[in-house]
Image (tube, rainbow, N blue to C red):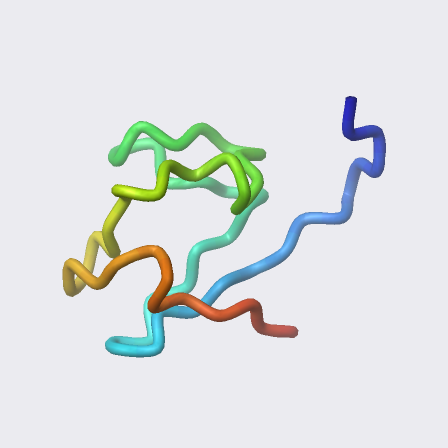
Length: 61
């Protein structure tokens, strides 16, 4: 069980710059707030440009 609350990260699409924020999730895409990046399905794609999950990189904002 992951107990490090408040340790949410952000990931940026290298194609279009879309930011996936673990704290916010993407409810319209079926990813509830608090969904960690490692729990995002491998077949998930960027909601802005359709890039694959592997086209995202963790960023410090």
